[in-house]
Length: 115
Image (cartoon, rainbow, N blue to C red; front, side, top):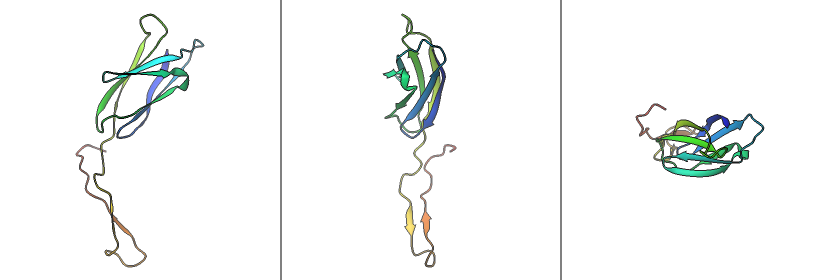
C-alpha cells in the first residue's frame, strides 16, 4: 500500500505526484485515476507526472495498487493547478529611465484568485 501520497509540484498544466512504500511486498503495478482518466504506472518509480491539465482547475487523484482482487486500498488527494498569470509578455521600456537603467513593465494580472 503506498504511503505519503502527496503532490510534490504543481504548474498551470501538470501535477507531480509522489509516494513511498513501507512494506517489503513491493507492488509494481499501480493506477492513478483522475477526472475519468486512468493511468497505469510502475510503482517502483515512486512518482508520476500528470500532464495536459487545465489551468486553475481542481483535480482529485486516487492511487490504487494491484495487491488484491478488489484492486487494493485507494489513497486520494486533491490538487489545484496554477492560474495563468501572464497573458502578455513583459515589455522593455528603454525610454523611461536614463542610460544604464532597464525598466520592465509587467501587464496587469487577469486573475482575481489569490496567488
